[in-house]
Amino acid sequence: MKILAIQNRKGIGDMVIFLPFIESIAKKFNSPVHILVKENSKASQFLKTNKNIAKIIILDRDNKDKNGRHDGLFGSLRLIKKLKTYKFDKVFIFNSSLRYSLIAKFASIKDIYQYPLFEKKNQHIILAAQDFLYKKINMKIESNPKINVNEDDSSKVITKYNILNNQKNLLLGIGGSGDTKRVPANIFLKFMEYCSNDYDCRFFLATGKKEEEHKLLNEILNSKFKSKCVALDQLNLSETLPIIKNCNVSICNDSSFSHLSAAIGIPTIVLMTDTPLLYGSYSPKMYPIIPEGEETVTHNTLGKDNINPKKIFEKFKEIIN
Image (cartoon, rainbow, N blue to C red; front, side, top):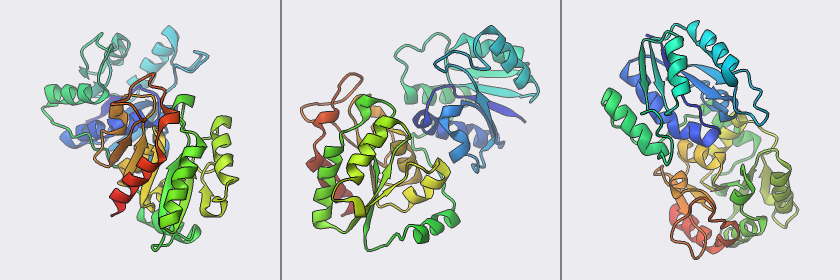
C-alpha cells in the first residue's frame, strides 16, 4: 500500500506539530508514508531517518515571487503528473483546500481523506488534525511530537564540543522568523547572568542566517559571556540536533528551535511574544513564558520587550531541580 500525506504549511514548527499525526497513519496501515511538504519545512534534514516516512516530496509553491514549479494552474498540472507516477492508494490531506482535493482526484488516488472543505478560517492547528484522524480512521492522537537523534551522532558532539556533565549546558534559541518573535539580546544576557551566578554554564546559541538574527548573536558573543558561548549559526539542522540532545534545558523564542528541542525530549522554556499560546504549550516538554502584564498571548501581543528574565531563571531552576 502506498500512502501520501499532504502537509502544505510553511516552516519547521508546523512540520513538527503534524509529525505525530503523519506517523499515526503509517502505524495504522503498517506502511511508511510519503509526505508532500514545502522545502522550508526542512523535513529532509530531520526526518530522513524516520522509519514512518517513506519519501519526502517537495511542494514548490507560495514563495514570495509566486513562481514556484507548483504555483498556478500549470503548476497544479505538473504536481498531478508527478503524483500519478507514485500510484498512491490513499491520501490524507491536512487542509481544507479544494485545490488539493482536485489534485488528488486527477492524480487517480482512490481513497481521499481530507479536512472539511472551505473551513480554514480560525482552524485550530492541533484540534483540527486530531478531529480529522478520529473521524476518518478512528484514532485518538496525542499532541506530543518526538524526534529521534542518532546515538553515535550524539556521542560525537560530546567530544567535539567538550560537553561536560558537571556543567549546565543550555540551548539558547535566540533566532526567530519574524522581528516580533525575537526577544532582545539584553533579556537573554540578564538570564545568562542569573544562571552564571549560581551554576557553571555553557550556552549554545541557535539562530538562522538572517542579518537581524546575527545582530542578536553578535551582541551576545561580544558580551562578558563570550567564553561560555558556542555559536551554531553555521550548522545545518542535522548537525545541530545532536547538540540540542546533549543540553539540559532549552530557552527559545517561539521559533523552530523550540519545536525541535521539545520534540527531542529536552525541557524547553518558550518565550511567547506574538503568537497564540498553543504554539509554545502543545508538548509536555514545553514551558511557556508570556510577557509581563499579559494573561495570555496571541497575534499582535507585541510583547518581546516585556519578557522577564527573572521568570525565565525561576522556571529554569524549577526544571533542573
